[in-house]
Length: 194
Image (cartoon, rainbow, N blue to C red; front, side, top):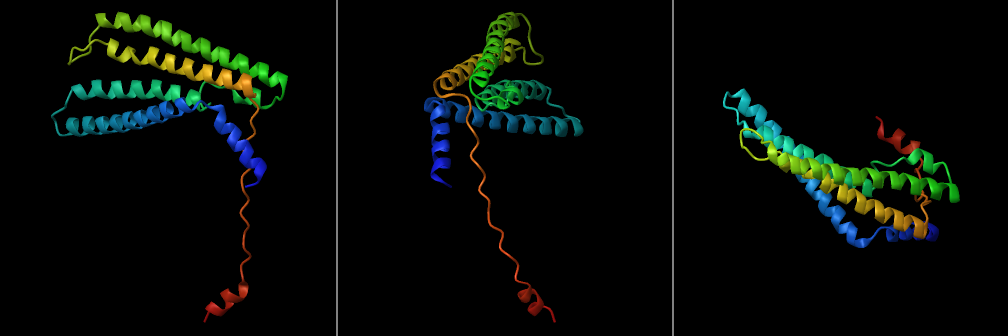
């Protein structure tokens, strides 16, 4: 790796706020646990139904794990620019046009995040009037994931806006190192045959 490649990687590393790195890691671990729990609860649901003794509460657990995994995963993907991000348009541009498009894209994502917060909170409050069966817990327990994800998406989008305006959005990917392919010695192959 050349010095220029190391500088590019170092600059990319400084573009993210270090305090959010831990938050991202925690959210990724939570998502992994939610996905594992979701898979496990589906398996147990199938097994208990197959043997003729279904655990009805497993459907509630499964839906809760699934919904939280989706919304927390969307927030993490926003931080990684894997979700809610229109890369095809912005990567084709450079300089001021790219800066303008990147800011517009992130403002749209920020608008979506505020809609998730606002309308998700309204749904959360209304969810106390409906209950899940068989446990009787308010459906608001599911709706809480929506404003939570909106707040995280807004936080990560503001981080991207601040860093992008400060340092620019155009960050080339480090070039892949080409590994040399060693020539095959055909004489060794001939000696090994009887």
